[in-house]
Image (tube, rainbow, N blue to C red; front, side):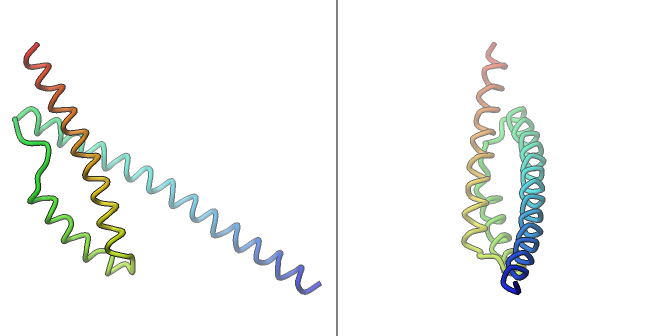
Length: 108
Protein backbone atom coordinates (compact mmCIF):
# COMPACT_ATOMS: atom_id res chain seq x y z
CA UNK A 1 0.00 0.00 0.00
CA UNK A 2 2.83 2.41 0.89
CA UNK A 3 4.50 1.66 -2.44
CA UNK A 4 1.29 2.59 -4.30
CA UNK A 5 1.08 5.89 -2.42
CA UNK A 6 4.73 6.64 -3.19
CA UNK A 7 4.06 5.92 -6.89
CA UNK A 8 0.97 8.15 -6.86
CA UNK A 9 2.91 10.94 -5.16
CA UNK A 10 5.69 10.57 -7.73
CA UNK A 11 3.16 10.87 -10.56
CA UNK A 12 1.78 14.09 -9.07
CA UNK A 13 5.28 15.55 -8.75
CA UNK A 14 6.12 14.43 -12.29
CA UNK A 15 2.97 16.10 -13.63
CA UNK A 16 4.03 19.34 -11.91
CA UNK A 17 7.49 19.21 -13.47
CA UNK A 18 6.01 18.49 -16.89
CA UNK A 19 3.60 21.42 -16.58
CA UNK A 20 6.55 23.69 -15.74
CA UNK A 21 8.53 22.34 -18.69
CA UNK A 22 5.57 22.96 -21.01
CA UNK A 23 5.30 26.55 -19.74
CA UNK A 24 9.03 27.12 -20.20
CA UNK A 25 8.89 25.69 -23.74
CA UNK A 26 6.05 28.09 -24.59
CA UNK A 27 7.99 31.02 -23.12
CA UNK A 28 11.11 30.06 -25.11
CA UNK A 29 9.13 29.95 -28.36
CA UNK A 30 7.54 33.33 -27.67
CA UNK A 31 10.92 34.81 -26.73
CA UNK A 32 12.52 33.44 -29.89
CA UNK A 33 9.65 34.86 -31.96
CA UNK A 34 10.20 38.29 -30.38
CA UNK A 35 13.95 38.02 -30.91
CA UNK A 36 13.43 37.20 -34.59
CA UNK A 37 10.94 40.08 -34.91
CA UNK A 38 13.69 42.42 -33.70
CA UNK A 39 16.43 40.86 -35.81
CA UNK A 40 14.18 41.09 -38.88
CA UNK A 41 13.90 44.83 -38.25
CA UNK A 42 17.71 44.97 -37.98
CA UNK A 43 17.96 43.09 -41.30
CA UNK A 44 15.62 45.54 -43.01
CA UNK A 45 17.59 48.48 -41.60
CA UNK A 46 20.88 46.96 -42.75
CA UNK A 47 19.49 46.23 -46.22
CA UNK A 48 18.11 49.74 -46.60
CA UNK A 49 21.50 51.21 -45.75
CA UNK A 50 23.69 48.73 -47.61
CA UNK A 51 25.20 47.24 -44.46
CA UNK A 52 26.44 43.62 -44.53
CA UNK A 53 24.08 40.92 -43.19
CA UNK A 54 26.73 39.58 -40.77
CA UNK A 55 28.65 41.54 -38.13
CA UNK A 56 31.55 39.32 -36.98
CA UNK A 57 32.69 41.80 -34.30
CA UNK A 58 29.20 41.88 -32.75
CA UNK A 59 28.99 38.09 -32.95
CA UNK A 60 32.30 37.74 -31.08
CA UNK A 61 31.10 40.17 -28.38
CA UNK A 62 27.91 38.14 -28.01
CA UNK A 63 29.82 34.87 -27.76
CA UNK A 64 32.06 36.30 -25.03
CA UNK A 65 28.98 37.63 -23.20
CA UNK A 66 27.17 34.33 -23.55
CA UNK A 67 30.14 32.41 -22.20
CA UNK A 68 29.71 34.27 -18.90
CA UNK A 69 25.89 34.30 -18.65
CA UNK A 70 25.53 30.51 -18.55
CA UNK A 71 28.26 30.24 -15.93
CA UNK A 72 26.25 32.62 -13.77
CA UNK A 73 23.14 30.49 -14.40
CA UNK A 74 24.86 27.09 -13.93
CA UNK A 75 24.30 26.22 -17.60
CA UNK A 76 26.90 24.57 -19.83
CA UNK A 77 28.65 27.47 -21.66
CA UNK A 78 29.40 25.27 -24.69
CA UNK A 79 25.69 24.51 -25.05
CA UNK A 80 24.84 28.21 -24.79
CA UNK A 81 27.39 29.13 -27.48
CA UNK A 82 26.17 26.34 -29.78
CA UNK A 83 22.60 27.54 -29.30
CA UNK A 84 23.58 31.16 -29.96
CA UNK A 85 25.59 30.17 -33.05
CA UNK A 86 22.54 28.35 -34.41
CA UNK A 87 20.31 31.38 -33.77
CA UNK A 88 22.87 33.79 -35.27
CA UNK A 89 23.24 31.64 -38.41
CA UNK A 90 19.48 31.72 -38.82
CA UNK A 91 19.40 35.50 -38.32
CA UNK A 92 22.17 35.97 -40.91
CA UNK A 93 20.24 33.77 -43.34
CA UNK A 94 17.18 35.97 -42.83
CA UNK A 95 19.27 39.12 -43.28
CA UNK A 96 20.72 37.74 -46.51
CA UNK A 97 17.19 37.04 -47.78
CA UNK A 98 16.08 40.55 -46.81
CA UNK A 99 19.14 42.08 -48.49
CA UNK A 100 18.51 40.05 -51.65
CA UNK A 101 14.85 41.09 -51.68
CA UNK A 102 15.81 44.72 -51.07
CA UNK A 103 18.32 44.58 -53.93
CA UNK A 104 15.69 43.08 -56.21
CA UNK A 105 13.23 45.78 -55.17
CA UNK A 106 15.77 48.54 -55.88
CA UNK A 107 16.66 47.00 -59.25
CA UNK A 108 12.99 46.64 -60.23
